[in-house]
Amino acid sequence: MLPKTRASRSFLAGAALFLLAVSVTAGLRLSASVYRPQAPDYRWEGPPGAPVVIAEFSDFQCGGCKAAAEPLRQLKELFPGKVRLAFKHLPWDFHQNARAAAVASECAGRGGKFWAYYDMLFSRQQEWGAVEKPEKIFLSYAKEAGLGEASFSACLGDPAASGEVDKDAKEAKDRWVRATPTFFINGRRFVGVRQLRSNGFNFIERTLKK
Amino acid sequence: MKRVPWPALALAARFALAALFLASGLHKTAAPAEEFTAVIEAYQVLPGDVLLPFAHLVPFAELLLAFALAAGYLTRLSAAATAAMSLMFFIALGSTVARGLQLDNCGCFGSVHLTPYQAMAVDACMMAMAALVFLRGRSRFSLDAWIEAGDSGIRKPA
Image (cartoon, rainbow over the protein chains, first blue to last red):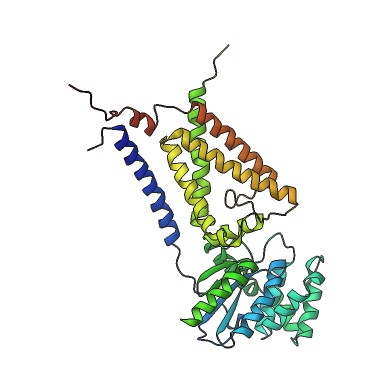
């Protein structure tokens, strides 16, 4: 039976609208499942079974992603043997060579040199970021890393290598990853280097103390 | 000369505001709060400790206001709160322009990326609509009308 007085009607309407907003918010917030990253073996670093698993969605041409390399290195030093890192591709369209760099890193990964190539791409971002055709530079990095020229060149045109990048990008979209770098530390999200340095480091410390 | 149909315009403005706030609130709520936290962080107006709570609060407030406006509940108060939120966004955006900060994403309507000036124009329109709802928003099509039709609750002596 509906209330008759103004005060009770006002209270009922207010409570109903408040509950509606709460239930919509809770429903949307709680519907997200915990993220368990998957990546080819060569894009993992750190011991399997480590208590802290970090997945980084990154773009080789993004400045923030380059800046993230340092805190990630610190994490490995601070918590030796406790951290395992997976790299996930998320090259943005507005970074003209990001996608090509991601594919090149995949090819380096196939040759067992993903992390060496990762370091080169980030530390020399200025060198290849703005050039018209970066393939020659990517090939020179591959040679420097000790990869075979012919197999690396063939891999650059391989749709399977590019497919790995697409797979990660789709996963990022499905997971509402809208910025790089985005980190998932044991499933919990941290967006940007500042969140990683402040909240992320604290979260790892708390996790390891448990 | 024809009279301006203020009540109809105010009703349209009320529903338009509700739709805008609903779209914005739903998108922010569906996305992880950390995403919106990073967007607010780029404005450099709030201390780090309050960013995450603020990122949770804003979408909830947007949803609540959207529902209140759509239903016409406490219409004047809801319109005033909508105008206050739009003003807050307007000032925050203006401050980034004044300080020369580059925003990759204004955080306004999800995947629709607006420049600060475009977003400020949208906020100005929303403030104007909220003012119209505040001044002329009384309508039969509202919970307020249903509430006002109830008894005052004061019993007259027999």
